[in-house]
Image 1 (cartoon, rainbow, N blue to C red):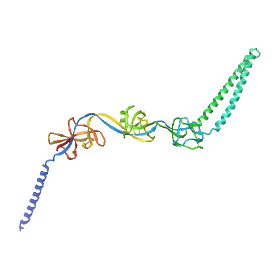
Image 2 (cartoon, one colour; image 1 turned 30 degrees about the vertical axis):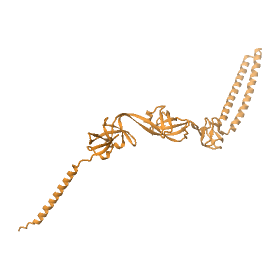
Image 3 (tube, rainbow, N blue to C red; image 1 turned 60 degrees about the vertical axis):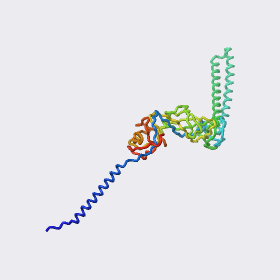
Image 4 (cartoon, rainbow, N blue to C red; image 1 turned 60 degrees about the horizontal axis):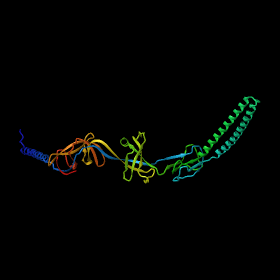
Length: 367
């Protein structure tokens, strides 16, 4: 037995497919209309490209102010420190006594040596008298010449003994003199390392002194600046208050930081720097490279370390064309780039955020 056909169900199904088809057609038309909408003409600012064979920039380096002479000084001898005559901040002159060692034992040894010297001189006089007397006796033939030879040898021995003791006395006087620690140059005491009553070894630091008036700047320079700068080159302070001249390099390189120390002299006798002070120096640098300076804002990200810039082509409403460039040097505001740019190109430097390749633009300003 056949079942009756449900015409209502068929009609409802057909109506549903029809509605779906209508929606798809409508959506397709909408997309087609949005794709076909023309891009708006974007206003931009451009820069006329003029390629340069080199670029210059200023590189800042930190420099520390140092005294031209600075040293930790101590005695050449071991001994007990009895006096320290200076404190931190004391101003001293060359030759001033800074500290003193106990010299009681040295004085006792000196007295002993003086006694030995007096005895040796007496023996020398006796040997001279004997030699003179025997000379007369031998001349008369009363004594053999051998006796005179022995007298002359005894005199030579006595003279040598006197000379040896004199040398000992001189050495002892030097030790007594070295028991006074003396300033080797005019300067200021920057550190006192110990107090009286302390036993020190030879060379142990007692005070540290640095020279006054003569200051220099010490900077650790990267290799590119070491290769660029030459002795006598002039650099400026970052605040333009002073200038300084490169005086010398340390020939060895710091293997950890890959820097090399350089010393600069300030071009002003009235400059009042302080040892340990940090100053900023500005070093002018010039490098050979064919390119152009552009604002950093003109750069768009590229691939494989390269960057993209945009230039305009055509008349009136212009087309935008991308160009690939390499950033050779950059700072916070500008970059020196080289690559697919030519003299006369109109490079977009403002408004790049509003454009895409192929878009038409209108030049509002030329720099």
